[in-house]
Length: 147
Image (cartoon, rainbow, N blue to C red; front, side, top):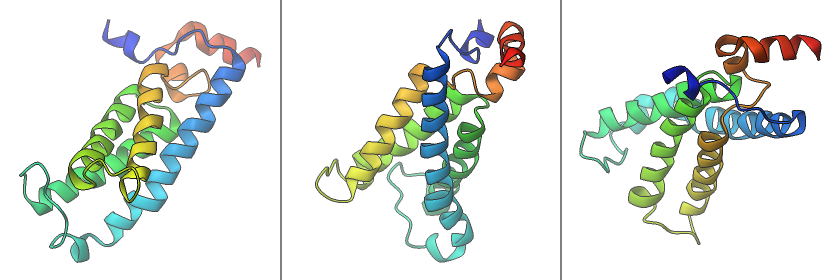
């Protein structure tokens, strides 16, 4: 049953291509524009980083870096896609709701748009062109070899 979470659905090639584009678009943008920036500037940001859940500034920053680097990387390659996208949904939900205070007219718009993309990927999964297909689905693996 747990394995079904990772097996891609029987999508068309065009749908799988759209999911690949979405994974790369949302995953790599998050990774390079947000995750790596926070990781590279960890010591400079830790004192000023917001603590919306009460874990402490350092712990909050570490959790955000895990989401925006590790989960974004997993999403981009399509490995454990739904779980990676769910982690990013939580990250963007907290950012939108608690950090940006649901502001769609200002700084919260970007978090809201990321949130929408990640929710779609939680629902749809990684598609045929993902590592999930290669690792978790034998029948899909044979279909990929025909392409």
